[in-house]
Image (cartoon, rainbow, N blue to C red; front, top):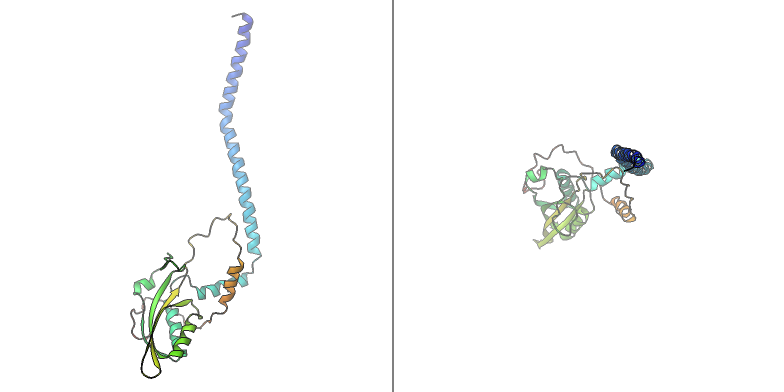
Length: 237
């Protein structure tokens, strides 16, 4: 190898070594810069979504929203509300001029337990429910009036079964299954950066229908721990 070739090889080797060292040193820096840039873009998108959500929330009327939430919870409570159910059933029976001869409700443990898990009781039901059995005696037309009232008075209840038998004179005996519905609060409220879902026209229509429910004023009951089970007399509580 000539002297000129050796003199050119050494700078070339040094240059290659410098490039390799520079790449080895720069690679973590480049990766860090790329990650920071990616996080910055993600953060900007999240900030934009949060800003949009904040603007939506600020545009809501606190008073109107509070009234709507309170009304919705009176009609569809977040947990089993047996005291209110019993009070409403008793008032409707009395107002209809009927006699309550029997009422059975689930065991105390089932009533008093927290109902955080929404379990469908049938394929057609989308809300968790608790079923009560009620026996009534009275004129058939008054029984019909009671059935209409039970489904139009808060909290949300529906007649799930009905058997009517004729008794003496114009009296009939009705054995009624009544389901009381509730809807636990969601366990999560979604990610912060997710947009608020708009209220659909169908949901707005359903909410407007809530104003048609009759609301009965009732004395507050502090606990359900003393509630009897499988009651035979509706009017002893």
